[in-house]
Image 1: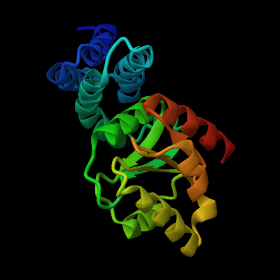
Image 2: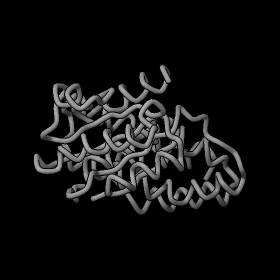
Image 3: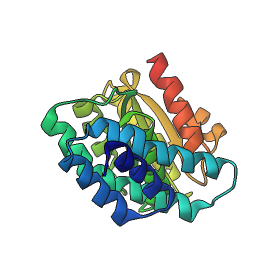
Length: 217
């Protein structure tokens, strides 16, 4: 397979939600000596952006978006270690720390936002789900991200978003990071009330807000 065929294949794998093909083609890209950054940008990321646009136009639904994110991640697992090996770098839009707050184990929305942010050139550190407030504070200190994205899918876990912002203030870190929130029960009004800089109703909106905040930081 030529370089162009491998890269096109990576894009198609995401568009077809083919997890195995994405991993196989990513390995082929590594074996063929293709620049892993190019394989991500023109292959996997191009695919997920197209899927995101289809979702925005309501041509596909949430299950397809989740499958596309999983497909992209299977390819990234192969290509990202190769980037570190080569010490080449993707031109980064900025660093985003993302996680679902304590008391909440919902993963889907956060995972899609993380995949879309990665596809749009952000360096994403995903802390997972049920993340304690002190962990968010520690990781902001450690990684110094431009943006902290807090997900809450339960009305009972929403107050934890506020708690994280208050903890950042106490730690003297609040002015060093922009906070975006998201999740089914949250809203623009809630973001304003707790002092977050942004609110994403969906993954595409979260990416646009992250871009704006990254440019202004």
